[in-house]
Length: 633
Image (cartoon, rainbow, N blue to C red):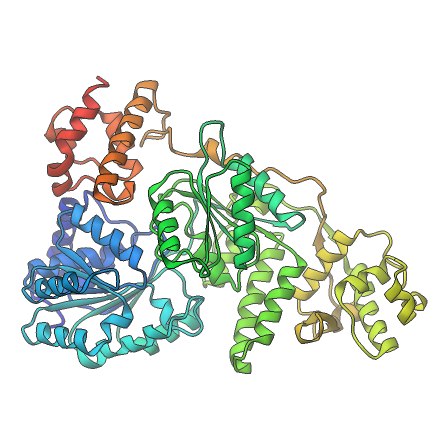
C-alpha cells in the first residue's frame, strides 16, 4: 500500500479541503494542518506535535476519510481512554462518518458485531486501546484486512505514552512497535501535544518512525494566562482566585483543580462545595463507576469544577474549560504544560494558575530520590523538575521560559503575571551568603545537617528547644537575618535550590546541604536576585470580563436579541445532547451557536458556510435550528 494513487499533491489538498468542509463544516485548515493532512493522505508516515486545541484529531480523521473513499479501507486509531473513544466516535457519527470503538465497555455481542462490520469494510475509523490492538485475536483481524488491501492507516494518539521520559508513560504502548514489524506497508501517524527533544527521540525509536516526517507546531497557547503565586494558604488562595476570576452572581466557569494526593482531592472538593461551587473529586481510589460518572458529568454539565489527581485529564476534549489550577507543583514542566493545556481549547481566554512553595520542591525531590529507578533515570527526572523550578522562580516572561524549554523562541507575551505586573526584584546576594554560611557552620558545628525550618530559626535568632539542645544560638550566624521575614527567607531558599546552590536530602529528613552552585555565590562571583514579597494578593484580571461568551464572531458585543437567541440555541442543544448521550459541544460548538445567533438564517441555504455545520449536521439539525432561530426575527 503506502502512497496512494488518488491525485497529485495539489489535487490531494483540494480533496482534503473538500472533506473538511463537507464533513466537518470548516472552510480552511489551521496552521500546519494542510501539510500534515496532505502528507498522511498520500500515505506518508508522520510524527505530529501539536498543542492541545490545535486540531490534532483532524490530522488523521480527514486522511482516514480521504483514503477510505479512495478504496484503501480501515483506519485504526490507538487511543488510551474509553471516555475519549466514546465521545470521538459519537462526534464522527454525528458528522456522518462510519466510526466505532472496541473496548471493555462493550458486551461480547457488541464487540463481535463491530468486528464483523470491520471485516465487511463498513467502518472508516475504528478506535481501540493499545492493549487490545496487540492481542493475537485483533492482530489476526488486521492480518485479514491487510491481505485484502483494506488496512489504510494507523493513528497513534497520545504518542508520548510510549516514552519512559514522557510525563505519562504507559508500558502497553511499547507493544505498538508490532504495527511496523507486521504491517510495514501501512502508513502510521503518531500524535502528541507535549514532548521535549528527549521524549521525541524516544517516540521515534520505540515506534520505529525514523523515516517519518516530523511536524512541530508552535507550542504557544496565547489565550492562556500563566500565573504562579507563592503558596501561603492554598485553599483560601484558590477560593479567592475562582471568585475573582471565574464567578458571577449567575454562573461559574468550568475548571480543573489538580492536587497531589487523593486525600487532598477530597478535602478541596468538599471545601469548594461548601463555598457554593459545583465540584466533584476524581482520583484512582474511587470506584470505577464513580470515576466514570464524574467524568461524564464534567463533560456534559456547564460550570462544573473537577478536583483531581493527575489520573484525570488525558483525552479530555471539553473545549470550554476556563481555568486549570495547581495546588501542588507537577513533577516536571511537560506535565505542567500538558495539564494547563486542558484550559481554553476553544481559543477563548483561560487561566493557568498555580500556588507554589518550598515544600513542593522538597516533596518532588524526595519522590525522585526515593524512587527505585536507576541513577541515570533519576538524573533526567531531576533535570525536568529543575526546568519547572526555573519557570516557577522566573521574574521574566513565563511564556518565553515555557516555550524555550521546547526549543521555541518568543517575545514577552504581555499575558502572564510577570508581564502584566513585573515583580520588583531585590539584590539578595548578601542574604544568600548568610544562609549558605549558616548551613555550612551548622554542619561543621554539629557534624550533621538540619532542615529549612531550623536554619531559618537560627538566622532569625529564634530561641527554641532544639536551638538550646545543639547550642546553635552560639553560632556566628545566629540572629544575622532578623531583618528578613520567614516568607522572604523561604523565597530565597527556593531560588537557591533552583540554582543548585542548595540541595535537599530527602532520605535524611529533608536536611539542607551546600551544592556546587554555592561556591560562586560565597566567593562573590555570583549575584542572587529575588522577588520582593507582597503581603497582599494581586488581582491580575477578571477572566470572565474578557470571555467571548457574549461576543459575536466579528468581536462586537451581542445584542439583547442575539443573546436571547443564543440562550435558546443552547437550551435546544442541551436537549439534543442529552437524547444522544453526548457532550453538548459534540452537537455544535459555542462558536457555531454564536454565529447562528448573529446571522439568524431563514433558509437551509443560509446555513451554508456557517462554521461547524457539515452536510450531515445540516440534514440532521438544519430544520430544528431554523425553527429555534425564527422566534427571534
